Image 1 (tube, rainbow, N blue to C red):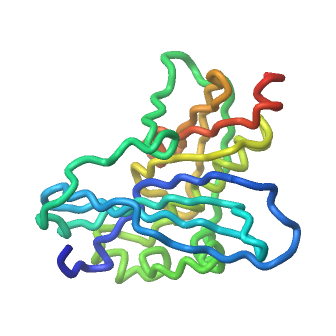
Image 2: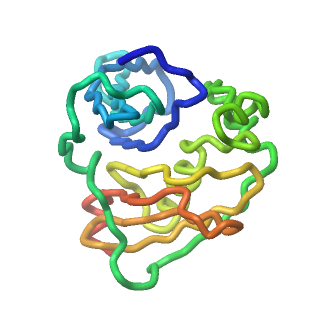
Length: 217
């Protein structure tokens, strides 16, 4: 892949798998790996995997992050994403009204606050940088929106084993997120709509519930 402009990089997909109970204290280490690079012609998709372990080597989390590098393609290589089960599932909502809906308004300073987690991409804080990337104002981190949805899912349905979502349109700090959920055979399919625009911020989302919880629903 040729050199690319950081301003043209977009986070488009995220998958989280919880592999062990989350410890209340201790030291965690995260190890990255390259999962796949997909040449889309003009653009390129890069999938990275991150395994997080405790000090004894027990796996706690596994994350997959997919980014779109605009104008980075044309080098040859894989043309399609490989099937990786829940990490690549399409998760189309069923043809009925959502089983449960939650709305939550973000704050004007949400992106600045979320930045304290360590995501220092200036796209979310610097107006000049975001404008050059095609956004008139800094946008909210996709992971922040996904975290809000994850909270809504946990509060309604309880613990889950994995979480997946595709980021399909930007969210501006201060806008309202509407999480729409459908319970389907041990999974909850969901999407997140920006109330002010009517557009999906997250599509094709799903969590796989813990078996004990799924059996009670």
